[in-house]
Amino acid sequence: MPRASLPTGVQIEYDTFGDPTARPLLLIMGLGAQMIIWDEAFCAGLADAGHFVVRFDNRDVGLSSKFDHAGTPDVLALMGRVAQGEPIEVPYTLDDMADDAVHLLDALELEQAHLCGASMGGMIAQTVAIRHPGRVRSLTSVMSTTGNPEVPPATPEAMAVLLAPPPTERDEAIERAVSTTRVLSGPAFPFDEERIRARGERLWDRSSHREGGIRQLAAILAHGSRVEALRGVAAPTLVIHGDADPLVSIEGGRDTARSIPGAELRVIAGMGHDMHPHVWPEVIDALSGHSEKHEAR
Image 1 (cartoon, rainbow, N blue to C red):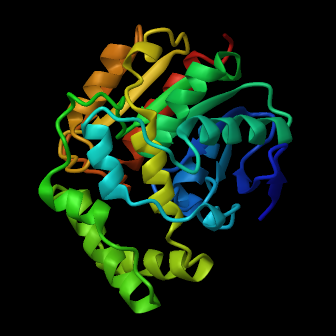
Image 2 (cartoon, rainbow, N blue to C red):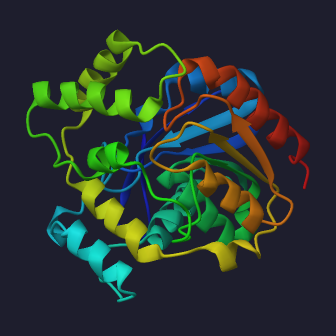
C-alpha cells in the first residue's frame, strides 16, 4: 500500500478504490482501529456508487507513524482531571489528527473531498470541517458525538471494553477482537464469529502495535466539547447512528445533528457500535445520495 510523507514528518499509510476522477471520499477510522476495518467489500461498494475512495491509518495505528517516544498517558488520571475541569497535556490532539487528514488530501492532490468518519473518525471529520471548511464538500459523521459532557456515557460493559489493557499476544488479541465486537455490535444482527476472528488475525498480523490507541483516547479527552464550534460548520452534513450503540449513545448522534445547522439524522435500527454487513447497503445508499447531492457545491 502507498504511504504519504506529510510536512510535519508524519507518515500516513493509505490505499484507494475506484476511479480517481470520481467523487473523492475520505474514510476516517476510529479509536485504535486500522484502516482495514473499512472492509474492502464496503469500500468497493462505495466505489461502485461513484466514489474515489481513500482509506488510511490514522497516526499511531496500523502502518502509519507511531508516537511511542511520547510515552503512554494514564487515561484514568486524565479522565479524573477532565471531570474536575482541569486542563490536561497530551502527546497530540484531534486537531493534529484532522490536520493529518488534510495533509493527506494535499499529497493526493485533492483540493476537496467528501468526508466520512466513524466513531473517533467522526470526531476527526467534524474537526476538519471546523478547521478547514474549504476542504470539505460534505460531511458524514457515523456513530460519533460532539464531546458534549451532557451526552450519556457508554454502558458499563462498553466502557470496560474501551479501557481494557491492550493485548500483548496474538491469541489474546484475536479472542479480544471477538469478545469486544460481541459487546459493541449489539444483538440485532447475527454474530459471525468466524468473520470477526479472521479479521482479528489479519489486524494483528498487519500491526500488533496497540499503545497508540491509548494516546488517541487521550487526544479525544483533551479536545473537549465541539458543540459551539460545530454551530459554524457550513458543510452539508449527514449523521448516521444506530439505536443500539452501547459505546456512543444515540444521543451523541442526535447532539451532532442538533449542533450542525441543517444536518440530517439517519437512525439505523439495531445497529450498535459496529457497521455489520447487514447495514452496509443502507449506509452506502445514504452516504452516496448525500455526496451526490452535494458534489457541485
